[in-house]
Length: 332
Image (cartoon, rainbow, N blue to C red; front, top):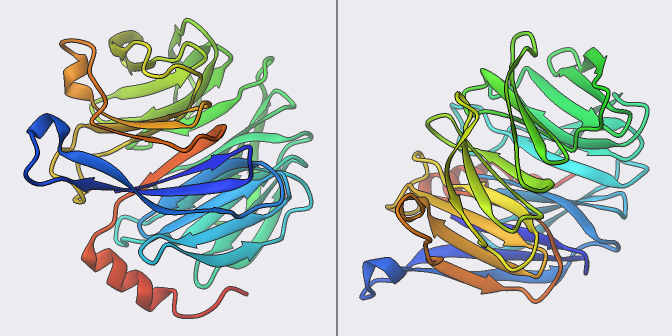
């Protein structure tokens, strides 16, 4: 598994999660640095990773692309004319590398790219103000956005246009589809609403102790949240109750969460979760331990920078070979 983190200091950080042989089972993981360099001219606002590819968006209006197997830069995209606020990849179930890249910006627009070889397909004006977050449905046919105009919007990615737009009454900061695409989550300060994807009907709502800054869906109907409470909470989305919690997971605000799902073949243990905080620390947890007692992190890295986002991706031999063949052409 690879992790990338962006910072206010304009640096991108890359790490490889490796297994240490000849070590006790409770301490058999380490975060090994892959790369670290100043990739943007302004602070990094968001990051995304899928298979061997990664991307970062910045307040300098650009998107920077990375090749994780070679720990190298693939270049940058300049289609936005204002700060990039969110980036995300779409990977079809039949592929081990991403097929599309979507990005949102402070002018309310969303850009759609084909990753062969990162060609700009279309720009759609979605919100009247900045887009706060963007989430693609697992089918790749639609995406949801929330913006500073206090609205929720839906993008028809097949036709490349906005198909739905409604006022929420409050500004939502995050929107995420669950792993199956049957539901989505919207975060408004410390509250998280669970909605049916088909009709946006509110199923349940739960309230965190403080403002939520990061959220990631997990398996078995769980949603992981973190934020100003410095903890990581696993919510049962069906009941709206806390399944378990890692109290004081960090000494500062949690700014990013990555869930390692069961289909990730990079490590043997499928119960891993990574988190990053604004004080520069990245930690990897075994969530099974949190069900019994407060766990100690399995691995930790300190970037000594003010982290703003975290993204993760799995890598295996077949993925790397396919990606090298797929990305042989240059970025236009």
